[in-house]
Image: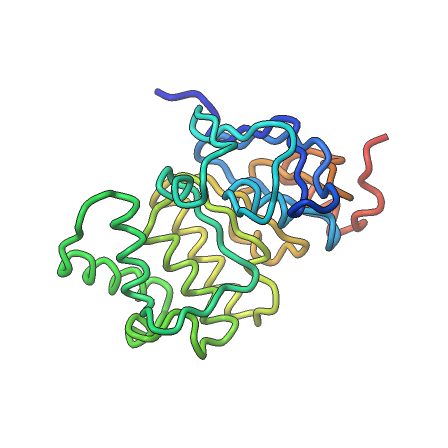
Length: 250
């Protein structure tokens, strides 16, 4: 059995482009089959960490290392990281005119596996997975996110996650701007991902609604580009009760 953590971040410093430093020495470890939550006020660098882990070229790592599944991926491009099993759900998913949701997921799966998929098998799995998320099948043949509501875009991202079965899924403010029903559906999808794949989760959020149906293994609080507090699920309750101001370690 592999006892190495799925993700190890050591002393990570990140700039946005050639501009100022946003992250100032982040240390974070996510074990296999774990759900971690990264919380903190807006504008503290939470999303920057997500982008740095996935290899977004707009974010420059100036110091430190990212290990994924025991391998140093600090210098790997985005597509190579995705192939290894890292998935990022965006706060504002991109619209891709001319590419259907179905074609996009099939292409991503083929890139990940390195082999062609039988169309029948793919469509069967897609149909079953859409049913789990209460998604209308017609969305599969619509252009990716074009004309989708906020809730539909988030459902489409959770659908991609369930189809791709990454080893690590990073959800960046996936619950922002959603109504109660959409949050519930997204939350159920995330729960399904954990139950079916045992992939690890890093949930970036400043709200806790999406966490209600999940078992949280660890909570991290970020302020101004630094993780100021680590704890368990009880830290989420503390934040709900007292806000972020009370949490800075003495």
